[in-house]
Image 1 (cartoon, one colour):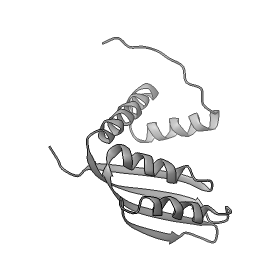
Image 2 (cartoon, rainbow, N blue to C red; image 1 turned 120 degrees about the vertical axis):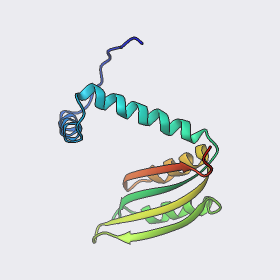
Image 3 (spheres, one colour; image 1 turned 60 degrees about the horizontal axis):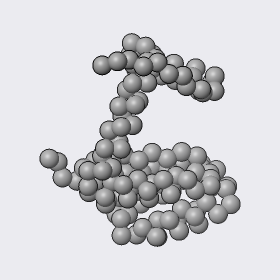
Image 4 (cartoon, helix red, strand yellow; image 1 turned 60 degrees about the vertical axis):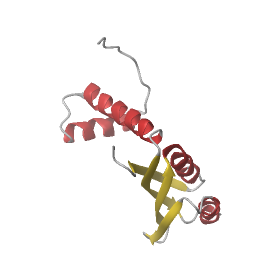
Length: 135
């Protein structure tokens, strides 16, 4: 298998933090850490195409952003048949966390997660999926 070199542009502080993390996690070098990220990215996409999955979506958002809770609620209600449960946590006077249990076809679950993570005021979101039925 041929190895291909390519360039990636990132902010210097992001690269510095990435270098700290891959070293702490015990990767041999930056290239191996990137390969691991690429493999995970591809595996996540393949999971989206496997059929029915269950997942959890964790969203961190700024309560002070005008209308963010309304927008999140709007998306959640639009997909009420796929959202099994949700939990709202007040982290401090400015930040909230939403934890959402979700079930459906992988691609559809990704679409719902992206709609929620893309809401103005959401600082970070992470979707974790697993197949409902193991092969």
